[in-house]
Image 1 (cartoon, helix red, strand yellow):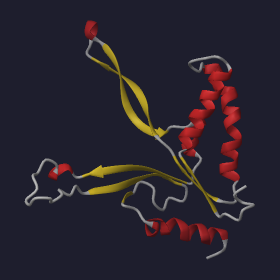
Image 2 (image 1 turned 135 degrees about the horizontal axis):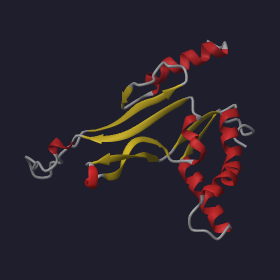
Image 3 (image 1 turned 90 degrees about the vertical axis):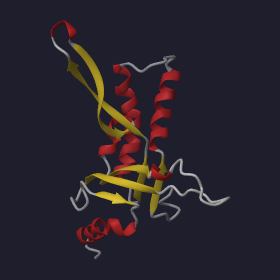
Length: 174
């Protein structure tokens, strides 16, 4: 529909909502409260057309999503005091079928506040205490290895120029 309308880009915010709605609808239709391992096959098949549209779209497809955590089990203590704990090990996009790995560029964004001024009393009546904020993006994946591993503070279009210019060269439009 967006292509027919002449759009050049599509932004989905948040892909996590689509994923959770699909899961919720499946559970409701099958009168379940939790998905079993056997439910993920059919649910994944229902999710597949969305992923294929994302991958094969002639549009620039920008997708935002919520953060989820991967956990790993560690053992602490020894002998009779041996205990197992689940700890956060890494982050991922919260969506079905590892959707986060499909993107050409994957950026984990974080809102960072400098709280060093929090609690400071205003010097004058009516003065607001300013708290510095930044949007920080960690480039977790870049298909062309131009930005991978970089930390982008308050990113702008210019930060992504190495990727865009390389993309145009590869397409023969530079």
